[in-house]
Length: 287
Image (cartoon, rainbow, N blue to C red; front, side):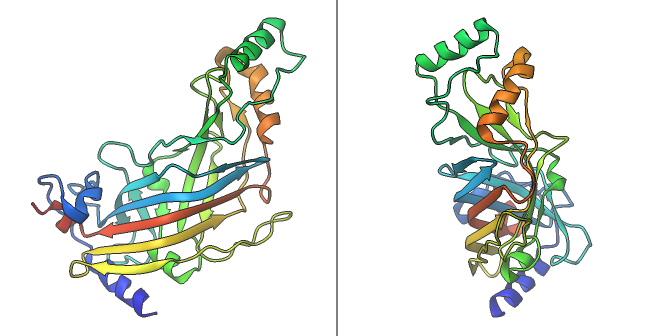
């Protein structure tokens, strides 16, 4: 509990907004996109996911490229850093990095359905024959930054929701086009991640995350929550949309059959492993 009390004391000190100045350096350089000039910013946050896996339906995509969530933290109840917090968007709008992850297998071995029009079957098969079988999956925010809730207290105690994250997944492939998504802004994957143990509906079984370890530096101005593991296997996944542009009415069902969506709660899983950094905005603003 000692580390939790220390974190609480540090969070309580991160209350006053800072004035923007030169770009931060050293250990604070990672907070360069923190909205320190916004008076609602009580803390700067960077959460880096470096490994894990996201499973939707019957497709599992390992996280092999670092994904960064960044911005400011606002304490919804003034003076209550241990209560509800919400995210303030990064200054460049890149609050959740759009980092493509390779989908194992891609479209290798997949052939066009026989019920497609011949010209569309030929186009798909030609694309595959030319070697464009690779597919990437990119997790994107499906709501404003304020819909993202993060709680270091819940992370460290392994109780409750550590991170609420509404997202959609963009599928990238020349044939699928530039607007092929699983989920949408109106029907997102509503992740409620915990460092504790989940209680999912069947057929999923409970899985357990990890609070990680805590390090406090620079006279309590910098908090590092290392090697945390956040999990959720209770969310539902909606269907595909926008795949193939004008032919989405034909290609969306095809994508759904490959991915195995829509899929109800209890058949999907998200495991995010990484490190979370919190900083005093005043220190970030220092020359």
